[in-house]
Image 1 (cartoon, rainbow, N blue to C red):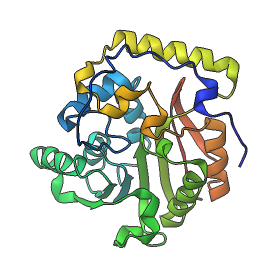
Image 2: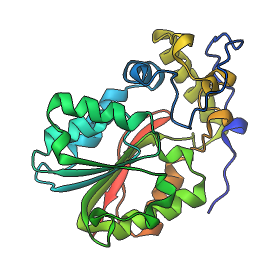
Image 3: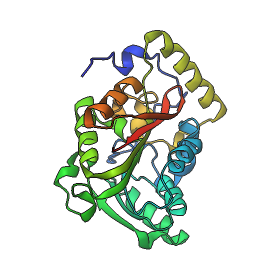
Image 4: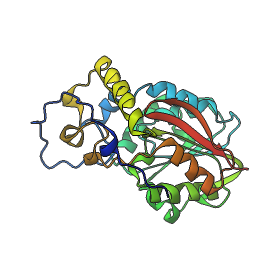
Length: 264
């Protein structure tokens, strides 16, 4: 795999102007748990991630409405899940997430919307997906796999292994779409990525009380929160290496992108 400069080499980190004296004692926050209260996530993530709703709209629009089986990696609070449940009225879902805080919150949300009967959950780390048991997790078993703001937590080797495994799980014609953070392709462009992020954060001021200690310890996409994004070019190479012959980039805004492919 081509070696790229890491995020710390490419970025002058955005200053979130947070009070770093805030500490929370005896609390452990997993990567992805950016907020102290899970109930703050749906509001806070829209302040933190540029065009969060548009990103999910683009991803959900490419999944055929007749899709019957959908695997979601890192389902979080169920924002993308809810969109797809509405768009694919016959689909059954398997959602995998390792956060014991997120899944009960998501279950309650989907119960209120009436979608919960079409969803199953597994509490597990997606890195261990090959060891999990479910009828969705057999060779050529699912019509589509989706994931949002998850793969950047894995290093490149684990990303590639996971993408290979998802290709294995998809039926012929199956879809795999990813919404995630990406690095700039050059040091020169890193300046522009950083400026775009600063402008977004200036327009969407985060309340420091909402953020988990991991986010307070460092800057946006910090090493404290185990972020390992790669470039979009490298992500497309990983998809091709796994067997996706014609990967597509559906949407991009500086450091955020929606991309993936269809198993031929």
